[in-house]
Image (tube, rainbow, N blue to C red):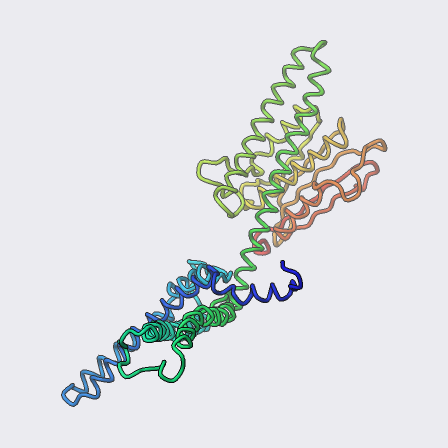
Amino acid sequence: MTRGERPGSRRAWRAVVAPLRSAATVRAGVYLVIGGVVAGAYLVLVSGFVQMFASAQTPRVATTVLAVVSAAIAATPPFLAPVRALEIAAVRTFLDVDVPVPDAASSPTAPTRWRAAAWYGLHLALGAVVLVVVLLAVPVATQLVLSAAGVEPVLLTDWRPWEVVPRWAWAVVAVLLLVALPYVTVGARALLRQAAGPLLGPDQSERIAELEAAADREAERGRLARELHDSVGHALTVTTLQAAAASRLLATDPDGARRALAAIEETGRSAMADLDHVLGLLRAGSGPPGAGASGRAPACTLGDLDALLDDARRAGAEVRRVPAPGGLDDVPRATSQEAYRVVQEALTNALRHAPGGVVTVAVAVGGGPPARLRVEVTNPVGASVRRPAPGGGRGIPGMRERVRLLRGELVAGPGADAGTWVVRATFPLGASGP
C-alpha cells in the first residue's frame, strides 16, 4: 500500500473492478445467454406467426389452429416439475444460490408451478436483455475502433464519428461499451439471486414436508442411539460380571471359569448381532423398527425374552419370570421390540447397581378395552447401592423415550415394598396404539 492510500478506498476499488475478473460473472453470463437464446426461439416463433397472419394468402383457420397448438406447447415447459428441477440445479451452479433441491418423488403444487413459470419468464427476459446488449455492444465497439483507425465502415457506411470528435474518444467509447457488459451481467445476476428464493424456493407445504422429514430423521437417529445403548450396554455389563467371576474362579474352579468365559463368548456374539442390525439400518437408511438391510439380523422381540433372561442368569443374576396368563404372539412387532429393550435395559441396571439380588420380570397383556401390554421388572435395592449421578446415564431416559414414542407410560423408581426398585412400562394395543 502506497503512502496516503486509505484501506477503504482500496476496498472500494476492488469492489468496482471485481465484476471484470470474477468467475461468478462468467457463470452468470453463460446462464443469461442461454436464457436469451431460448427467448430468441420464442421471438422467432411469434414473428413467424405474425408474418403468416399478415399474409393474405395464408389460410386463417389453419393458421389459427396451428398458432393455438404452438402456443400451448410453448407455454407448457415452465410449469413442468422437471423444468423447475433443472432451473434449480442451474441456479445453484451458475448463480451460487442455495435453493433447496425438491424431492424427486413429490409433485409441486399449483402455486409452486406458477412461481416456477414466473422465474422462467424472468430468466428469459433478463437473458434477452443481456444477449441484445452483447449483440449490439460488440459490433458497435468493433466498428468504432476500426473506423477510428481509418478502416472503411462495415456496418454504417455513412458513419464518420471522428469528423465531430477526436478518434481517440471513440476508441475510449468502444472500450467503455465492452467494459459495461460485465456490469450489466452483474446487475441481472443480482436481480435473479434476489428472486430465486421467492420463485424457486419451497412453498409452505414443501417446508412442512421438509420439517417432518427432518423430524423423522432425528427420531430415527435417537432410536438407533437407544438400540446401541441398550444392546451394547447390556452386553458390556454381562461381560464385565462374567469376566470378574472367571477371574475369581480361575484357580479354584476351572470349570466355573470356563462356563463364565463361554457366557462371555455367547454374550459377545449376541451383541455383535445387535450391532450388525443397527449398522444395517444405518446403511439402508431410515425405516420402521426392525426394517434393516437385506440379510441383516432382525431386531429382538419378546419372543427372544427367555434367551435374554438366560444371559442374565449366566452372568450370575437370579432372574424369575412371572408366568403370563396369555400369549404374546399377537403383540405388534414394534411394541414387542420396544418392550424387549425396556426389559433389557432394566436387567442391565439391576446387574450394574444391585448385583446378587433376585430380579423379577413380568410381561403380560391384559386390561381393556383397549388391551395394554404391561412390562414390570423388580429388583431389591440395598442402602449401599451406588446411585447414578444426577443427570448422568441414558438408561431410564432412553426407556422413557421408547415408551413415549408408542404412546405408553413408564414409571421407574422405588417400589411399594421398602428396598425395591421397579421399572413398569405400559404400552397401548389395538386402536389406541400408534
